[in-house]
Image 1 (spheres, rainbow, N blue to C red):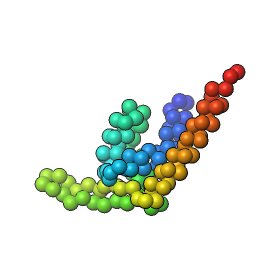
Image 2: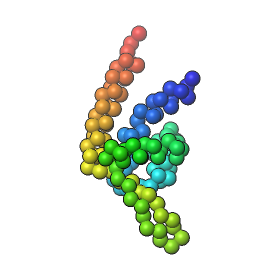
Image 3: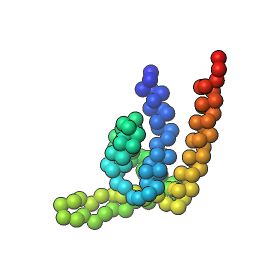
Image 4: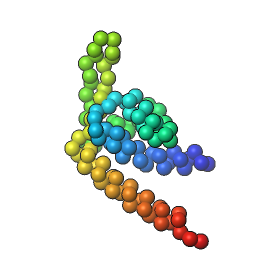
Length: 113
């Protein structure tokens, strides 16, 4: 039962986390997966099948754009994702909502019995 709730809670924040990781620089999918795992101390260990639908949805909404890199030497072309101006605005709004949710949850969970 724990896995079910954990999955549901994590799924709800993936857009926000992906946008946050893209806030400073463009990144490709595998880079996002590794960085998310590392920065979250392995709490978020995404599979490609989880990340790419998030990226495609964010791109469809205009929050990120993608561009293929030119292969250099033995390096293959990679599809990089970059946050847009609209994506930065959405990240701020989602972050504000997240803060309110966390405060509300804390009020309930820390309530004296």
